[in-house]
Image 1: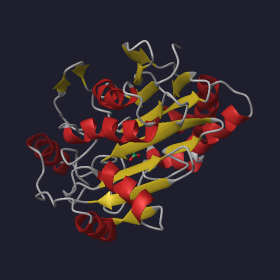
Image 2 (image 1 turned 180 degrees about the horizontal axis):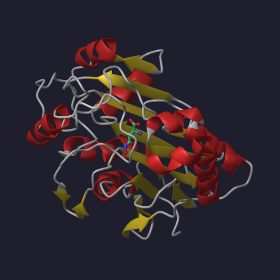
Image 3 (image 1 turned 90 degrees about the vertical axis):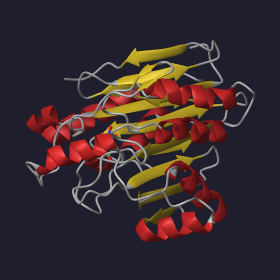
Length: 308
Ligand code: SD4
């Protein structure tokens, strides 16, 4: 690796998001500001799985989850937030302007409005409406055990390439001072049960940062990431001396052992970076990509190694 500053984020949509983060990092800005600005790019894009353009729950309502963590164990999170365009900004406000870590549902929305965030119309994007109508034909109430139930969504195309259908975005950054921060934002699994939360708003599952060791984040089937407190597990494995990739792999293997034959029905992926600026990723199945930009200022999309 060319070293710090450095930003790494999940899926193809991470390419555009990293550009947003790089504007902050390249000017010597804080990792915390970078991971907020970076994922805001994805929240504003019309994609299946992040922001208000995302797929709704099975009642037809888009509910958003996000969390953020800095280099001093400060963290903030919102879950099941409706009608707010940038949940990551609200998560940061929870971190900085409340005595709490997590706000959910109506309370999270009330806080966002009190903080001056506009309430957007309760309306599905045209693509989400199509996907929802398609889903209603079968209305499978089982959470769909696959990479993501994204219906027939078109691929959004941005300045540096298209995003695929699995773009819950998690981002980790190290700034020029060497400090680490992370963010994660999603509309969650498409057509989930109303009230369902995944790993993405949970500090320790979807995201964890320990500035003395490293940072990690997850994407994929949230229920199975939660089962092993995924991101925290990856950070603890790095503390024991594993490289970022080896730590991600060990966490994936732990999930695979728990799931047994059912491991083939899900996707789980981790990204990680350590204090030395080494980074890596690992996925359960083929098809996970992550985006990296480091001091060489080269935008890269890397295909992750996988277990099965
Ligand atoms: C969730 N982890 O809500 C998210 C979904 C995801 O790519 O990451 N999809 O479980």
